[in-house]
Length: 192
Image (cartoon, rainbow, N blue to C red; front, top):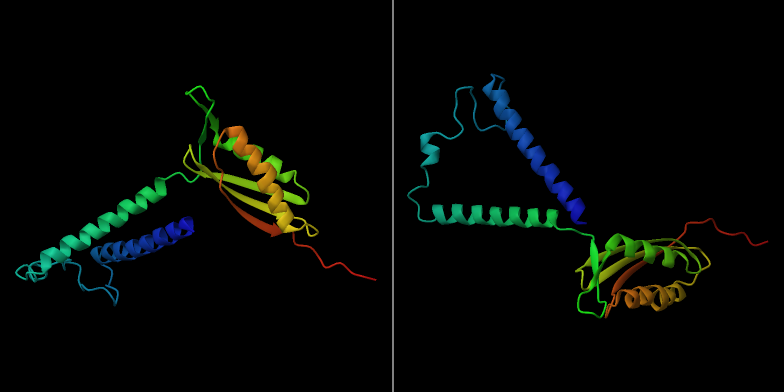
């Protein structure tokens, strides 16, 4: 979801900047101004003296300008932190009992969980992604199930075997998981 929003926002901002910048460049090079453009000629400035000083004496002008710029700055910082934040857990801290602890690569634990989940009865394919903090990871599991499998039984087996085994092996107190189950698409069977 965030990736889609990010791409749409970047696309819209890019299109607006391209349209404005391209029209300024075109008018500056002597092309006729588009009908929606606010300035008409090649020697026309973007903001003349009257436009720049129109609201300078109004009491609301500077607070509104500062508030809008502050909101834009906060939105830009939020967008930057959301883009730079890692979605996938790179390592899990395992309590070894000696006070030091050990680190297990997140990808390695994901691969082990995927292999064990794919070994469950009726599971065609499994995908696991670890998120959260390294001391309190969370799992996102996607299972592709064969048509004859009971989803409830598969979910119980996943919780009782795969997730419990990973939780115990890593020495975690809990390993919460979001599980998405999907069935393999197949043709209807004919009864004769």
